[in-house]
Length: 95
Length: 483
Image 1 (tube, rainbow over the protein chains, first blue to last red):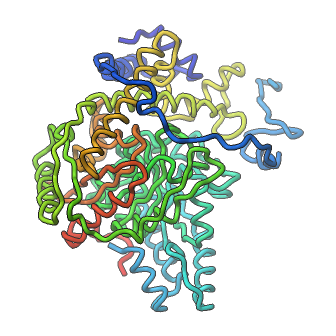
Image 2 (cartoon, helix red, strand yellow):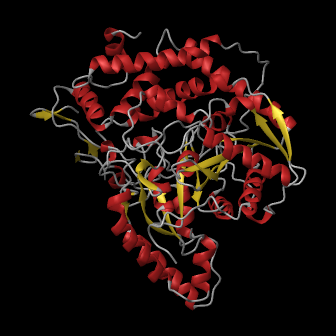
């Protein structure tokens, strides 16, 4: 069973606010999902090196490609100024 | 149901222009979408522009490529430059991509006619398509029931006669489940066969793009049109075309049956699958009994890995660069936290929390590391399976389409993915084909899983079934465009 304090800690790591959440229902849901996930603890793993691990991918050459135009990059920003994203603090800019 | 060949015939025999046909699909979508909620956005302008290009080509006497002029629906988590792509989320409600996904670039280059962007579970997280910020999609065979998730809008549009085929994405069954619920063919290709560039990420090691169609031959045609190696996705490798290889002959084919996939099925699904197995025997296939003891660990392994990847992938949504942003906050951290909590729906928030939990110090080894080891064990188990058979036959989903608004806990909902997600874990191709109906007349699907890059085998096996049953299980819903 996950506790409220643990949930608060995880929410902070996940950058989620718990304001407005039904904490009892969320705690219950997360706990039941973790109980279900806990079934993997019973599994014994018998693998040798390389078993099931070769996906066969290879990295491409690390070549510099043209960047996207700044105007395109900023096109979906809620607020922009002088080619930068804007984060607004009440009454002023954050950055 | 209308196939790609049906449309092709009308166009090449000049019985209708591409513009006329496209307009019919657009009109049908405008009329029926309020009932099915299959589309989030209709793209009439892009569709008619493509249709005009096709008509011009036809007038010049040039040959059309396989998907040229065919109306289709694209899942709304696939980026379309200049066309809103929402991922069915408040977070991206007004997001307009600045580049095209590889699949859309490829289809656009072939003058495919996009009717609209298909509804889905928010960020592809769900089994019913009810987790959409824009409301859930309905099943055209019975609108009291769901279309399935997460590519529910795509399946609803195709089964509802509002598109001839669709492109969805599948992380744990999101193409095959809605295909099964809506009586369609759904192909999840081998991981790496189709580029994921421009697919809004959920679980990057599991996600794959694929077709939802009204027949097996169309699934092969669409697969051939979208699979290619793309330098923009280092995991993409492309694949050999399959449509020219399909014969429908399964004589001597070894079909594996693992009892674990058949436990606890409702009678109607069990009977439909028994009938399918008998039919394959009649066609000369050899049915082989196998064990798949790892199945009991597949679902928790899948959810641990998918949620862990989701928590990382969805970390990019901070409201600063794009997407929803809150207007009520105290400082930068509060701005980001509130933006994310208001922008994401409950299921997405739940999965981010779970993913963060299994990746956090103290739990990482017990959950994430163990799940990665189990993933490798599942890959090994499948390798053993394919030493004894050519294709594994299972039901696609252990239930038929659920009632809209059914009261289920998250774990009960997750259980519906139990038969599909093993193929994603192992990166294998799998196809769902309609094989029967339950007592309410809702479609049932059978799933065929093959070895890596053996789409040819699974589609050929599916084609044999479809031909032998004369497509009797691909029932017309009676909605949308009829030719």
